[in-house]
Length: 103
Image (cartoon, rainbow, N blue to C red):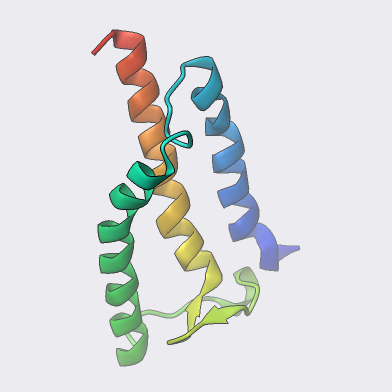
């Protein structure tokens, strides 16, 4: 079960913030092109950064806590998931706050 902790936590983050889309009408998922544009640059930068750090041996992952499913460059799928999920949760929170405050 430890192997899936990271992915389970990312799933929990999405599940916890999902109601913001509907209850507060955050409209993050309803505008997929805008979401992809918002994610593209930071995800790209952090993936390149991680790949460079992995290649140089500056960054490693404990095998106990990752599934072993790696993308090219030995980037664990969990790391890419983190780079996608956390910004989405932040955008949902930001948009829901903005709607609530009327800004």
